[in-house]
Amino acid sequence: MTDQIKMAPCPFCEGPPCVDVRDFVTGVELTMDRPQTEDFDEAYVAHVWCHDCGAQGPSIDSCTLSTFEDIHDLTVADVMRIAVERWNDRNAKARNCYDAGEAEGLNMFPRSAA
Ligand SMILES: [Zn+2]
Image 1 (tube, rainbow, N blue to C red):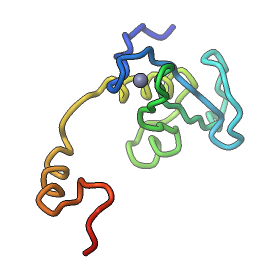
Image 2: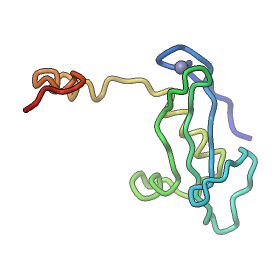
Image 3: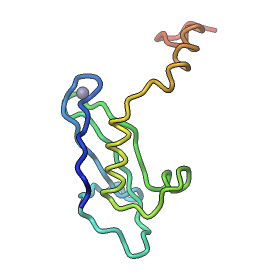
Image 4: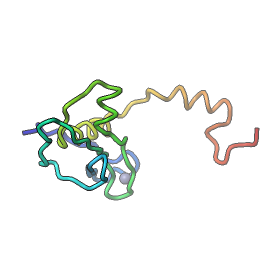
């Protein structure tokens, strides 16, 4: 049984979050209780989305987690939980990129011609 964690409200409209999870290969929607195979050879992709405005959190998949974050042998529930944790993780770690772009006018739409 997975421990419960509270999902944060949508950062745009404070609407209710939902979790979408699919088979990474086929794109078929899955349920949290789907069992992983004995060899852990199924891959899943999940993201949290806002039921009201449709905003989406980061897309989290077990292939990327395995290759780049050394996280292996994940179940559907594990991938969903990581998607929720990333949705909940609000931070300003890329703010310096935004600020650097501001100096160059990169935060304007449309951007000025170079
Ligand atoms: Zn929203």
